[in-house]
Length: 159
Image: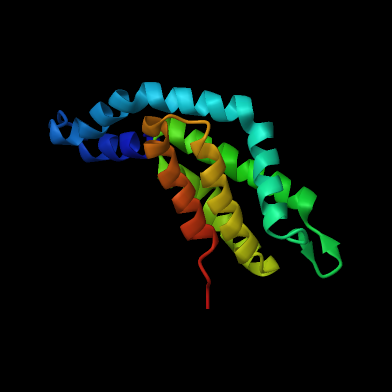
């Protein structure tokens, strides 16, 4: 939303916006009630969602958070909460670019350095599965693409 508003303000400098240039606003306001509802559900249930993701991952592999002699569980939890919160904010303001620029580009470099793309991929898949149970189909339609953006950005192997 903010990225689109900023772009609009530059593009229409000194003139009125065309109806086509205002389409993103119509779309935003048509989905606003779903955005705020999903945001509040995620906020309210964050701890339960995180616990469910963690339990599902540990059920898949009891040693999933162990890398060598290091237990990554607490770091994983903090990082996953960060991704969930930024994703929820991007949902609320309808701005995937906010998510990409503020978190994902930087964070993907960190994850690459620690070689945890496999855990990250499983986390994104599991997060998607868990969150589906908390949101309506309309809310999922606008939130799950952000989880997919997370996965695509954070799990991309760089050469």
